[in-house]
Length: 295
Ligand SMILES: Nc1ncnc2c1ncn2[C@@H]1O[C@H](COP(=O)(O)OP(=O)(O)OP(=O)(O)O)[C@@H](O)[C@H]1O
Ligand SMILES: [Mg+2]
Image: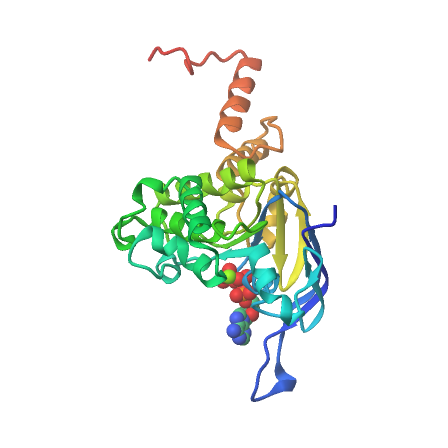
């Protein structure tokens, strides 16, 4: 099967209309492939080009040179713009900017109306999308009454209703409280696992990236790392030198390793960290009351 997205030697400069010769290159020769059903995080410090890259995926921005191909379509093909946007949906940081209607289900239907989807079909798709993000029971509510996480899930439902192959989410949890972040991450992973939708998640949250299957790191407009999260985050010093953190569990294990404790290098999640420390204790003959129910 051909890849869903193929990026070849993509370069992009924001035009500077006043001084064209001074336009600075923001993407500097990126080549990447995204397959169907992938769950990918994109990391990089501020200004490294993540949002610019995201916008080239559904032809909001076109390459200055190089190519971006979506489901076999070159994004420069203006006649196929609608088709490209049906393959790749985008979700942005601020849910308030993405919600346009005064009732949840009307908001989810908005994109479909623009596509001219018949009313019966629209009803089915809106209900399915609201079920998929766990917001069906709120379908007649006013979006402004919802929490940030719920609003973001409604925004995601509006995208899913268009039946895209891929959703690109640009820091979708940045404006949410911890509960909202969890809800959105749970939804995103479910859409990937149960619906096979390719997810490209731009985030500054290392714990979110650790939940993906692949992590891409950008630095100054280039892709500098593209690997499994275990491989990416085990290089703690390298991540630091790129201006990035590692997940909390990885950091704790790294500190303990530096202090001489033999812990595995590929720990990403709190439960793995707890298991590894408990294992270390049992090897050293230290008895803990973890899990015994005693004080
Ligand atoms: N519309 C624009 N016009 C000119 N330059 C821009 C524009 N948008 C972004 N830039 C510049 O392009 C570079 C990359 O920006 P981009 O928004 O893609 O980075 P980012 O990795 O998404 O950063 P952040 O983590 O802060 O969201 C930055 O130097 C930024 O100042
Ligand atoms: Mg950005």
